[in-house]
Image (cartoon, rainbow, N blue to C red; front, side, top):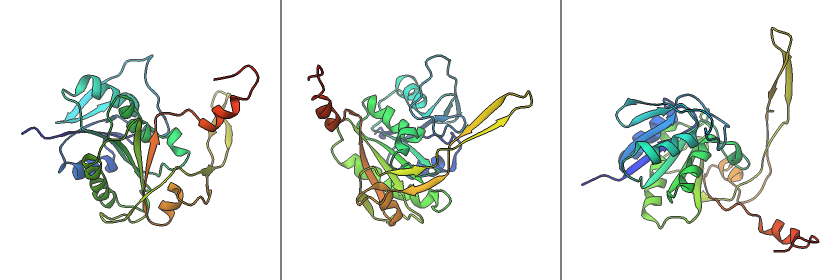
Length: 251
């Protein structure tokens, strides 16, 4: 009997410990194939490589690296590497949380989003704070979540974003959440290269999050595994209604 196929990717690179732990835990649910970036691709969002070639290498059976982004990895896996459609695509386990606005920037989340856009209706991204959470505990909990996803009807036009709290174990409870609001400093550091030309580092430190009951940020803070459904349909109904009152702009 053919085992169900599960595709894994991430944005920390094909040899990241979170990916290794997730692959080991999901092996009980089916045949796991990994196609992940050859190096860290954090915060590349949903980048796809339209203007440069990609390279792929199988480093061991069913374990590949791709020279592109997480979205590239999923794209080339579904359309070239795999000889059957996977029942699920899982991305992670990322080495930092992807809550609130992080889902816009995250390459890990983009891996699940790309799979969902490609018609894989059971797609999920996993993230944790690796400084405070063991990958083994998070992966054991992720296996429970994936088993549940496979047992339930698939979501329509959506994927799942999961974040683990500190010290996650296999039985850490889950909480259904909405995306919250995470805050960062807006910092630009200027310096000068050896040839006298300026260069810049962007990105500020983490400044906390808004206290929103039912949000993913609050759930992780309170020790729950945050489980959120993220829609592919990004049209804003309130904005549409407001713009419908603008002169000359009717639906």
